[in-house]
Image 1 (cartoon, rainbow, N blue to C red):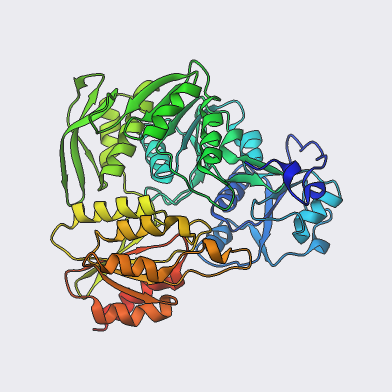
Image 2: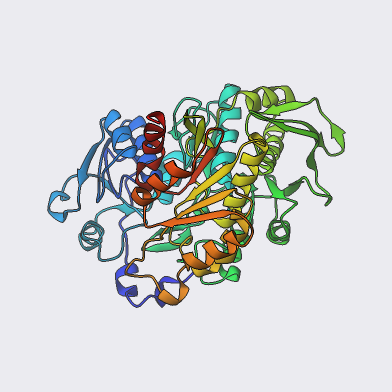
Length: 489
């Protein structure tokens, strides 16, 4: 990643930060409504600290979750309210050096840390850290790993980038020996451009996949790859590193590792953990795990899609290594209810199933469509996509999207927002994507936003269809609005 010294405003990024207190009584989070920051706020609250924070846009679901925990949230950023407000300030990675509250913290030399620093210092500490990372699948895999541990009474601490349907939580301080965390490769803060996962002291880890992403902070694939190479080198010799054998980039990470390595996979390449007799169906997948050549009793995973079976195999490897039995793991797989915004059925109206998914990278879109095909083989799959993230709006992913959406029966694509820091020459050409998709007999439609797409969808959808809505944002609340409108037909 780009070193701090290379930034034109390096003088604002490089500064001496005071030592954070060992036991802060109060904490203030700048950018509290982000998924990770909101969960971190909850961890501090559980730990008995007085927690507050601020954000520019305070709206559900995070605003209601924070309110339910009685965490005070200020809308908008103001430096004049900060003096004496907290013993520790957590600076979100969306803050720039000139952000009014982040600048106040720097100029007044108050104790300030990034999200991953706070998580590592106050919650992971000396616990057995289990880190799940990779370009795709880390939220689901982290959630499944956490569910297996919790189902078997291990009481891990955890922080996941999504809300688990089992218990409705995305975090817990836990009382057990383990802390399970989703290892994000995005940068830590404006004053620390290292990936978040470099802070988590992994004792064992999973790498699900490795494919170029986050083009806004990684200049090249080499740059992106280097972050993961540095991460795997952190896992100690006695630890276990689960690597996806079906991904050549992930397999290559073994050269930088010093930990024990187990490979998992479904292709013909050698894998220590694989699956045979795979039987997908409505509601999940039944399969026979094979561990180092030995078949175990059949298991049922309550999720669809090859990618989720791969996620389960990686979790199986970690859990067996941590002393859980195959029977314990299998029961937890069957009882896992998934996580919100990952193939989440929001409802059914007028015979149309409305599904919400977080997919926004072409590979994730392709895997999500494949899983929908497996789950509903006799229904039309109507994809509705919002390219919203910094990476998803870039030209580099045009071909990937066009290829992914050819497997849908229809595509409804919203126009990506052009922001002040976007490069027109590196911006997605929506018309090119639509033309490529239409050339492969997929119906293709485009609208500026959810308001424009909604009436188009209502004219197109028929009883028996699946409306698969994909976005890493709220997409104008289109899921609920579509269900309400369908119910009136």
